[in-house]
Length: 330
Image 1 (cartoon, rainbow, N blue to C red):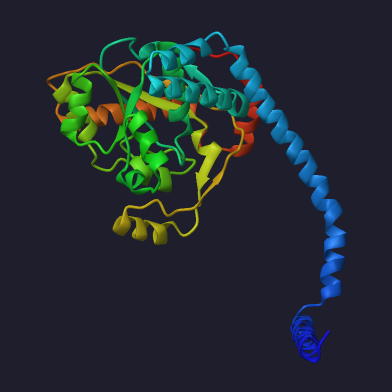
Image 2: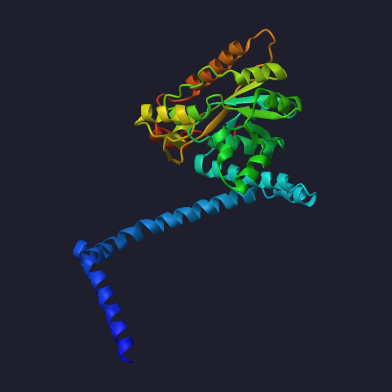
């Protein structure tokens, strides 16, 4: 080794030694190593059972989907005919149906109230995350072969990603105006609207009060299209996911200015979920939009009073998994 390389090597060594020495001035390296040694068994002890739980959950999903293997032929037929998006919708519906069954013991009551053909407007209470709508959409696809088109908040369409935008198109989610909604219904399709929207999702709580304000657009749509409104509510939806209850006034001020969902959400609890589909509120030309909106709100409020524990309790909603029947009430 010549003198130049030897000098460079010694210089680099001294530099790295100096850096390590400076780090050691602020961090006790031996203490950090001891902490890692101490907590590694604890981490492994909790990590391995969690991994086993994930494997059991995935296995349960596969078994649930396989149980309906005869229906998976529908996906194959859709792809063979070239209707790839129909096949994708059906496959996604199976996955969400399996998730609802395994994680929430999901039930649906009176699916028969959604017509097998013809238009109807589905109006539902908006949870912190509308899991119940995804499950209802899946059930409707699997058991009625009908897609429920949906009005989505405008912020959904600002989320980046080509795949996300494609999924919104495939499931016909759009930022509806009164006229575009009427057009959908006049074609004989099903349409869903949550009048509370993002505000109800973000600022609702376990008292399950409706946060609709003066929103009557959905009533205008139903009257203009001359279609029935089907009220929908899901028991314990606020116990599955919740929005942070502190600093609400602060978050509300930001929301009023930005219209963006900025309140943190927590949860994912495997509570019992049961969607109740109310009797259709038939078209009545004598009602004003305000009167119809109030009538629908009162119907959903009655469904909440009759079926929902107030205030909602996450622990009691977990125990509901053992109290209620596990058979699906379609």
